[in-house]
Every structure is written in C-alpha cells, then in structure tokens.
Length: 228
Image (cartoon, rainbow, N blue to C red):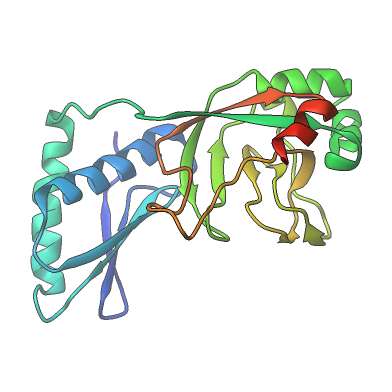
C-alpha cells in the first residue's frame, strides 16, 4: 500500500509535499513526476519547486494562492500521476574518473573494509547506471543512487576540512561528485575534471534530478588531458 502523501506548511510561503521517509527510486520518481506535472500545469502563484529524495518543496506567493487552495490543486495533480505516461530519462552523462592514489585517498580503506581489491571496488562503482536523486549540499552537487550493496559504506567519522573539486565519493548507498572544493565526510575514491556547475550557463548545473550518470575509469594521461 502506498504511503499517504503529506502536505506540510513551511513558513507562510512554502509547502512540503512528502511522499515517504526513505531513499528509494520509486519514491523519488513520484517526487519528479509531481514536479513535472506542476511545471506543465503552470499553477497560479507557484514560484519555484525544489525536488529532494522523497519530498517536493514548493515556494508560492500567498497573495495569489492560499495554502488550502494550493493543497487542493496539488491533490488533483497527485490523482492524475498514475494516469500520466512520464518520459524516461532525457540525459545520460558519462563521467570520466581516475580512481585511487592521491585522487581517491579512501579507495584502499574502503576496499579493505569490504574485503575487496581496489580493482573490484572500481568495477562495482563504475559498472552501474545511477539516477540523480537530487541536487544539493552545495551548488551542482548530485546525489546519485544507489551503489552496489557490496560497496555501501558509512561516511567518515570525522569529515575533512577540504575536499578537492571533482572528488567522487561514497556515503552509505549514495555516490556523489563535489563541484567545488569544500568540507565533506564522503569517502573519496576518485576524481573527475568534468565541470558540474557554471554560473554563466543556463541552467548552471550540468545535472538535474532524473538524469542518468555513468562513471568511466581513466588513467592519469587522460585525466591530465581533460584539464587542458
């Protein structure tokens, strides 16, 4: 049985549509489907929608639509979700990654944690197609899921103060890419030169929720060429 959809006020100018409280592809698909329907319907008073793992945050103008009116219109859309054939992923993005060594300082310990060879971790990580669940934490950071059960690994007990831009990491069942240098507690297994966020472009983020991402292992020569 589907979990009841909740409509929760967030201050006086936002509403949270909550589809559940767990991270899984089915719930995240519902979030993205409602986001798509709202965009297509052009509901009065809606300013912005922000999809997350299992909920959709909706900013609205209370002078143009009340909370109760918005909930009523959202429920109408939610009833239609099962009747609409939503398109599959529009974009597949390949990310070239150099794994291990100075670029992936946690690859060795992660492999030992699971009694695997580094090469096996690389194969498991790069052998899957990942869905972009959401963009967050910092601008352009994609939360991708889910990694193979054999490499599910908790975050570092003590986060690093500096994680280089382009670092590819694992945290529990998720994998992600740091667009900029920042603090972080994900276990870093590699690095890419791909640019994830450019404020001069529209849209500025390379990835969006629903995109499919694959990782391709590369050597140091190609990694250096990517920097030029």
